[in-house]
Image (cartoon, rainbow over all chains, first blue to last red; front, side):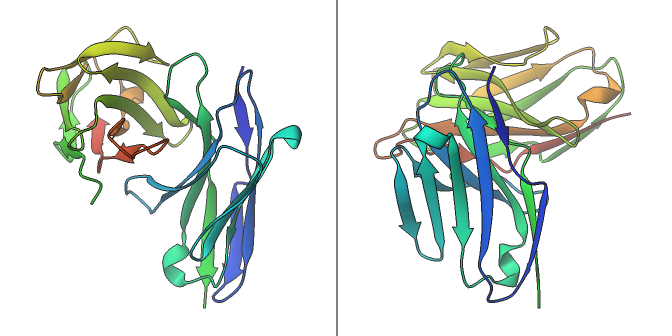
Length: 111
Length: 114
């Protein structure tokens, strides 16, 4: 089957850098996505890596190594508003373009 | 604002009842996905429709069904409700020009079964 593993919680202070890791097992691979979800809110797309390497979008970057079945989300210059849950996701190879999500990493940013 | 709308925002009902959740996708998106989010199971894919046709099924119970209408809005029907069906139900859409791998999620419907 398919599965994704990510840490359940990460804490950091404002201005710091934090890395959220994700390892995946999947029979077919179409890339790794990251979503952010504030408490009770809708998941919001952050980034997608289809190929190995680093993708940068402002303060957020995402990395993928397909040979290691591993990726990470890097958040820089942390702000209080970055406190949220972060999910890595891959396509469900049994279900078209639907996504399988990791359990999520809760990031708490303190001042 | 993702452009995906869902109604109602909150729903409180009793065990054994039936409810209908409604979703309007982002303009131009042909795919609609339904996901269930609960504390113990996380975000789970239920079902996908593409341009009115069922495209894929995930962990959807037989008591649940969905459809997508010609105007592309979708409804998720949950029947014979049980306490364990209490969860956040999200609709997402994708497939529009330039959307790539992005799925756009609606605000969700919070269902409480008492």
